Image (cartoon, rainbow, N blue to C red; front, side, top):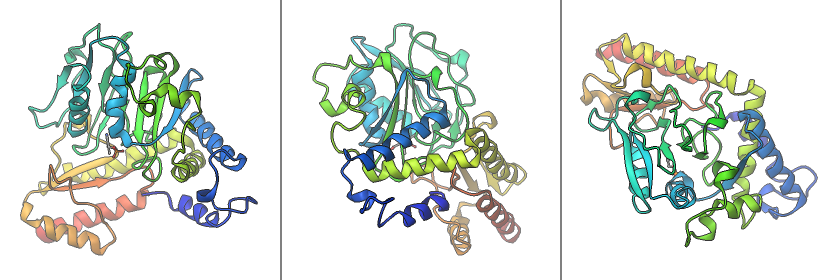
Length: 348
Ligand SMILES: *Cc1c(COP(=O)(O)O)cnc(C)c1O
């Protein structure tokens, strides 16, 4: 979802942005109107997340999936290996891509338990000589979210935050690189944001394509070539909306309350289940199963009748998944919880 207020604002500005005589979609990315849109989006993101001055914010394309390659290409910096925490489908993909460029030390692996837990800090088998440590704070498909930030000493920490960025306050200074595809909690698809500590820029592997080098984008304020201008503009509207909601502290409170409402219902019933350890449950993606999977179809059909859509679980895990990103209003969660109670009464 995107916030309705954001889509309405975009609608108002659709034909003509300000007095520019054109739509944002028609602007040159180097013109002064678009430059002001781009710069204020970055300034608002910096303000909302409290991004320190020694970090670059890059507005890129290629999705989080491209970062799976860009991270090793830019951060290995002569080292032969990196540490990866394997906690779900997305970290698995990051590991597979990194293996093309370096030795991957899997410093934690929760696959045996079906990716239903968060490894403890003490259990991480970190290598002091690793170029970086990569992890996925929120595994979107399994609904598993770290309840702490791994401590990695002097080794830069890299986080794929695609599905949890902006969901709560966080300390950017603990990370070397944070990246996220926009389409979950930032804005429409097509934009990928990378927040990179400056000292990690400028030492990419030889043969790194120009477009895959962080330095290219850092030096040109993400305007080396044509950026995804409209998605960047929309992201800027979302950052303003977050400020209006009270910033990340307010978002965090709302998000925790939303998630708890669903988990409480699941835990209070034998009809619904969630396999994830309680300390590792995601605030953004709540997977759940019915005691009788034969009822899945009836559940999804009944939900759709109330406007509750996109609830089908990822094809790899089945069951249901409620994605309750920032833009999902608490009333949407209330409607879901009400429907779940009713469905249990009728079918439990
Ligand atoms: C969705 C998602 C991705 C993939 O993002 P793309 O932008 O489609 O490449 C990667 N990691 C996580 C955690 C995701 O949720």
